[in-house]
Length: 106
Length: 117
Image: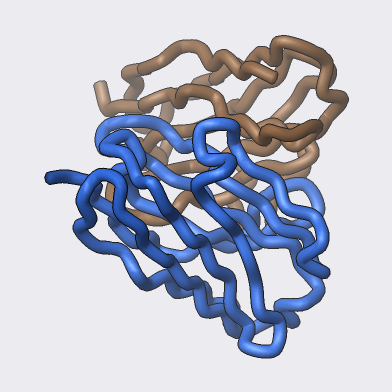
């Protein structure tokens, strides 16, 4: 199952709202997770089951979608949010990740 | 506190072998599936392998099947990845991760594997 994220990179400012899209090559129900990745650090689980916020993750992060179309939205961007974001499908093996979206400060 | 600590990375020549370990603490290791995920320099995340709680079910990405072997020792709270016939394209930071209900909820800090002559 291929996952295609868009955009591949995104420039935004502190306080902005941004949305990242992840499209699956076939239906995966809601078996999708989102991760944040900073250089030199471990990935961090943000959202699982497409829309469930992982414990401890700020409420400005939200996820949605089902089937083949999914979104990650960050409202009121904070300085620590500028990082790379990846979607991951857990519907079937091989487990796959999207190619990533790099969120940069404008 | 949940902790996952990888070890065993290093420099290896193409065609060589290397074994990675992941020592876990802070949770009942035998209750969870575990995974290895890697990130090559400048690239995205790539799932490598999964192992279920009882070690009977193992899954691999096509590019490593037959060369890598995932295993675990529940008595030692440890996860392993044995890598053989290593290729330059296996160069990456390798992370171990806990497989939760619908995501990988805890990760180690990673160990760098460099395959080069």
